Image (cartoon, rainbow, N blue to C red; front, side):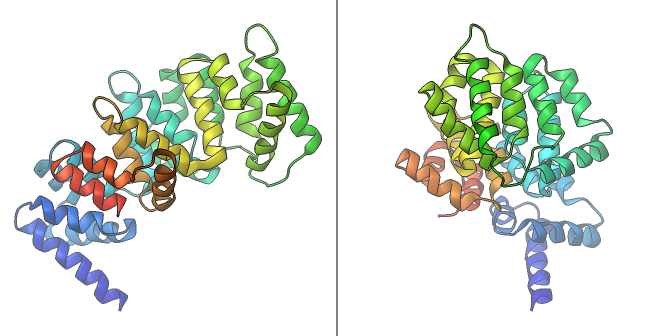
Length: 306
């Protein structure tokens, strides 16, 4: 049964890895396995050849294909921690990575990411982010990192009306914007409560909260607040939009495309594909197909599925 399946999944893996790297076989084996199966392939590889599979593949693969494959060999929190580290330590900070990850992960996920980051990199994620970002944007990220958002389902009606008023008075209703008010409401309250706040906000201001954020803020701060609101409303739609924007127009933002395809493959890819078709009238598959080439395209399409 399962044991035989495991042995098969592992042995088929070896045949291709041991006979020099046949990229098509690597793609087939890794992209069609679950994260758990890939971890077993890694262990079996080390046991059989006394070497680390990721290290061996790193020498054999190149470019974006290599990035996808190495991402697939990591368990989820390790991949998130690795992406955050890369975003912080690269030349210039890739704010998009910090936003995509921290605005969309649950409290539990963020706690594990923080632990893994410390273990892998020997520094605290919070310290690294504080050293690398500034102002209100930094404060929002630090707040998200505390993983303290209320995760109950309770809506406090009186509080929801008050929150909507507070945000309105901190933004649209006054000269200048009191961003702390936005932070306090958007980073602390639970999802159901906030959806109620957004309804109230629309009534009071005559505007959607997203439009107000666009009017009141700019740069990374605008991006992170919008990401928080979009993820609360519909997380798969948020990722669908990020994928769409990474591919439309001139050039492809591969870092975003890779990160989402690898990180969400086993979580909500089906929902993301549905939201993508709904919003853009074309399938995610057809978009990736037209936007990438070679082995890179092959592995992304495997992760996407029909």
